[in-house]
Image 1: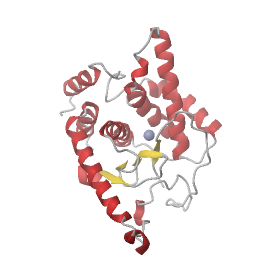
Image 2: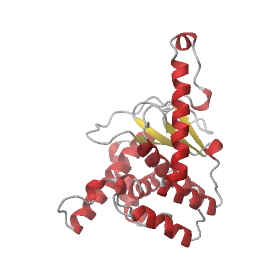
Image 3: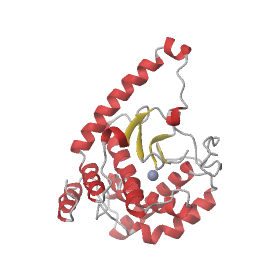
Length: 258
Ligand SMILES: [Zn+2]
């Protein structure tokens, strides 16, 4: 399975070996992980499941998820900024084609599938609008990098770089912890960098069958360069501030028509 997968939560997560690899790439090599049971038509509806009304639950879950995705596309400032940036970069998002709600492995909330150029929102784990907004922003960074840089997700450094950028511009910046308390600017910066490193490491581990040491080495190799590459958001967004609105406003100045 060729995607980068996001961990549902990184607090106190122990590294566990990734699940069995099931999808061979064009060279017949097995890499990446099958965390999306519905992907590539591998899901088969069973009589048992239908009898137990599970299929119906899944359809209702999909409907609710799609409604919330739509609201995020209309309202979430960073999601809107990313939509504009993708359009301006020649990779406009068609909601029906590029975003899909699916049932996923419980350990992830979303993913980006570069083969299909599709964002997966996990309807069973990403249920509230706030989380769906974060998933969409994060995966849209991967989509933007794929569009802009012709990213090769099989190259570990490329993967590490786009995960550093996504953690930097979304998850670690949305967390209010970084503006709370009496932390000095230096401590704040250090904590933010640690958050990005940890988050990127977990994402790389979730997406690829590499050891923690290999993943950490890749994140360290690309960190300096990719942490400071803030296109197209342009700033590290702090929650509870008007940074999101500022980024959205500046996006229009830089030609990302929104
Ligand atoms: Zn990611």
